[in-house]
Image (tube, rainbow, N blue to C red):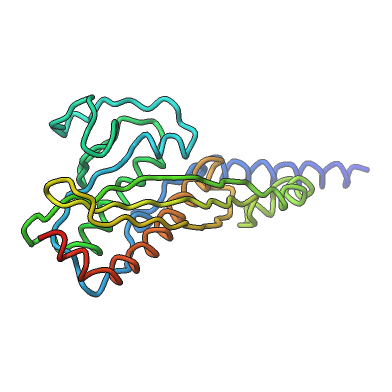
Length: 239
């Protein structure tokens, strides 16, 4: 009996120690590589200014507290009024901090700006127009098929790397290109897909954030292929 009690105490201590490690490493931040796609178009467009439709991403991610107030580091010429591409559609750069508590929206801004500057346009050329990113319909669902095993093993396998659950995100990605007179040159619409597991150290939110970022990048890769296909037409209309 004494041996059984000792074994139970030892088991509890091991579990407690593992959960302590998980707690100390939870909510791990996303790596910088998350925001940098390495898929570059073979032929780059002339330089375009980036804009993002913040309300469309707020609607997609269910964040209804969006504000039209721009960040302090930008001087938006249209302020809080209607812009040429809709209310709440802002010009953004790599230094932009959007006025939102939803990290996935700031991620979208970071991913889009990097993709445009590095993989879609040649930033050394003369500016030829604007490029706008919008979000459409979204499918976002968590799969808890591993939860029963997590509970049965008291989280020990999760601490060793077994997923606790996974998130599937499918996002409608919309990209529009305009010339310097705000005439629509091209519009592309694709669905990005991603599935990402939740490890114990991710925290409940971060794995959903990672899936959303991967889905956006998947959609942008498909759109970049369409831009490359229509390259000649786009360049001719931007002149």
